[in-house]
Image (cartoon, rainbow, N blue to C red; front, side, top):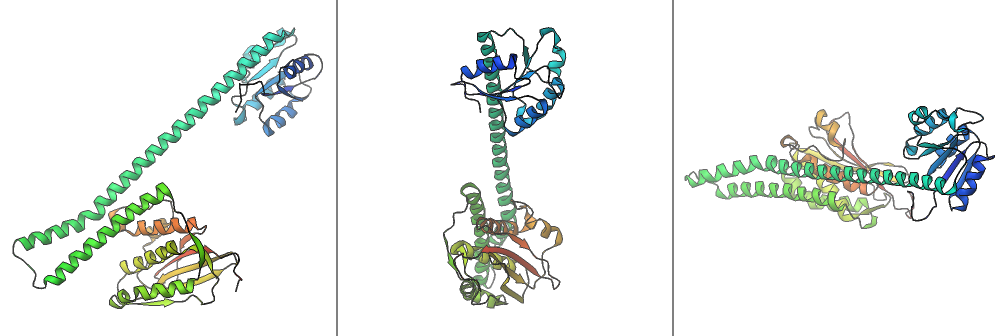
Length: 381
């Protein structure tokens, strides 16, 4: 952007360097301006495109192109929209002023040149250009602030809508059960009834926690604590942690990752969270019995591709196509929490420099794949 504290603007002169332009160049150079000189219109277009000048002095008579056409083509370059173009008219009556303004020219000057007048007019044009750029900058900032506010309002609406949709039905069901108990319709197996209510409460608390995690992720981002992670050991630990629940479901868990799999450069805690969410999704959205396996399906020397696969009912195509289609999940009651969990997983993998995707398989079920960077210092197997 032009600095008006000193005359350091770059001025491009276009035309025969003899007489008029030579005199103007001397005036400008002595006043501290940087002067670039080209003789032809084609040269002016190429030079101005490569490096945007702050002002252009354009001779009315050029050896190759019509000067009005040169001005028009210069003004068609978006970066030159605020660059003033001043015509040099000699003789003065040769200039078509209507045509000058029509093609985007600012004004014209003609010999004899009076130093103080020429410098004042150039300084005024540069000041006007700077003010126009300032106005455009302020407008861009205002538009960005408006967009940020709209995004914040949309985010707030999504959270409120999700909370309302996700919690309305289970809360209404629990309220109905409690009303029945107040009317002395107490179930015979009270422990089982209380356990079911507790499980429902836990599920809703998990959904609320996930909403808060989404908010923190979008506001603060995901900071990673990178370390060398052995995926085989990680998945073995996960299988042990989930074993009691898998036995009750029932589901069988298979660790298909080789013990000598390359180490990955990842945040262990965040990576555990991805695996936990994907396993939890598989159990939530399928009926028993279920086979669940985690495998490494590709190694290109830079990234490895992991897959969490089940042989359940799969994801409907209309939902499958939009799971990873955008940065924000589609949050509605019918999604049943799937969007939030996968959204968080996707953002964690993106922060690692990887990608997450849905893999369609002929045998059905659901396969979620994601890539992780291999530890650079680790010898590849």
